[in-house]
Length: 245
Image (cartoon, rainbow, N blue to C red):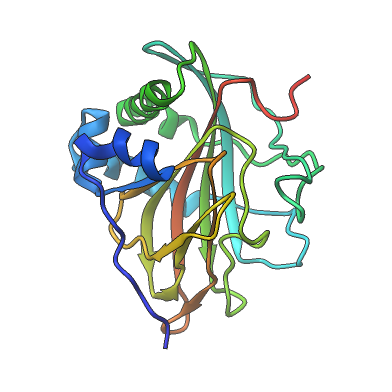
C-alpha cells in the first residue's frame, strides 16, 4: 500500500508568511492562477507540449523513465526575455548523481513560450521571489518533465533529497495518470523537521526557498500497464545561471 497525504495548501494571502516561517508553501491551482492574473483554464494551452518531450540521455542509472525540455529566461521588472539556448549545469555539491556535467536538453517549443499565460506565470513568480529577496533580475531555468513507468518504475528525483543551488524553486504539478507514489517530501536543510504530501491537483504548486529546505519526490509505479507524472519546474537565481562564467 502506498500512502497518500493531502498537500498542506496555503492561501494566496498567506504565501509570504509561509515562505518566511517555513521556507516553503503549497498553492492550489486557483491560487496559482490568481497569482499570475489568469484563469486556471488558460494553463490548458501549455498541456499538449508535454506529449512532445525528448528522452533524457544523461541518466546515470541507465533508466528510460524521464523525458524533458529545458529553456532559460531572464526576468527584469515586468519584462521577460528568453536567452539563447544553453546547457543545464549543477555542481556536485547540489547534485551528486548528475552534477559537474554540461547537460544539453532540447529547448522548449516556441509555441509554448509564446503563450501569454507563460510569461504571466514566470513574471508573477519572479515578483514573488523579489518580495522575499529583493533583486532587479532573476535568471530562470524552466524544465518540462515527464516521468513514466516504461521500465516499471519512474524516479522523479534519482539524485535523492537535494537542493538545486538556486534561490527559489517552483514545482508545478501538470498531470498524474495511471500511477501511485510520487510523494513530495520537504525537509529543513539545517534541522530535523519535514513534511510529506502528494501533489494531486493539476497546476497546484510547491514553492521552495532553496537555501532553507531540501526536497525530493518518491518513485512512481503504474496502476495498470503504464502511467506518467508531468511537472513544470522553474528555478530562480539572482546571481546568474549556474555554470555561467
